Image 1 (cartoon, rainbow, N blue to C red):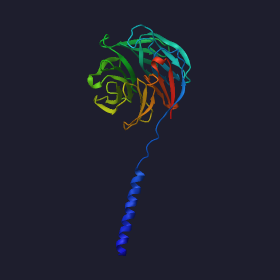
Image 2: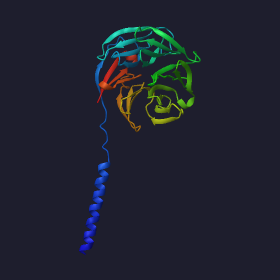
Image 3: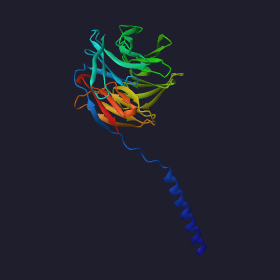
Image 4: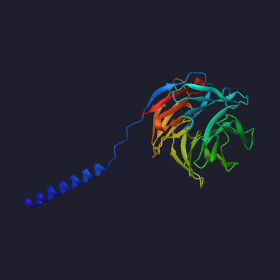
Length: 293
């Protein structure tokens, strides 16, 4: 009888030990992220569609449509805004049509302008070169991203295309319905391209070498801007007024919902060193900055 009790006791301790060991391997869920407003610009901006941080100049570039998103009216311009939200130069570069996405490599600012990609020298503020879409009458160039090696990718969100500018060669790199109306782009290193497919409301990853598309997260409506937080996680905006945090496993969390207030959240930017998220509000004519906590 005593031997049986001893066996049961030993077995009980073994099960308890296994349970404790298993519990110690369970990782606690990360603390939910939240946005805390830091500042907002005045409303002299004109339909701001995108924001881009220039670490060399410690300044923000803001693309202003100032008209219809596909208007060829020459009203569009680029502003310079400080990291404190003060507008330094409202019309730093003007004469564009409806500028949207921007990308930066060295001292060249790449800006989409309806049917063309415009290359602006950041030292002079002057346009040095333009690259036209294959069919200028059926083009809606939207976002821009630049890989580490300087390769530029551009989305055509109406006509299911992604252009590439590499070694001064401008071409349609990918096209077709599988892109599902690509808007936001983000190059991760040189081998991966993140795309926001607005038709699906999804964040997807493209292998640059094979062009294989892998779904990451969905349910985000009109996906617009995509930025990385420096830790293999992403912040994704829905133009209608939502911002999501997507972790490395593809799990998403809604951080902002301004749809009821009719405040759009267009092509966002993130400054990792300050954990600062910049949100262009489109029709509200201002940029709002949030701390990501």
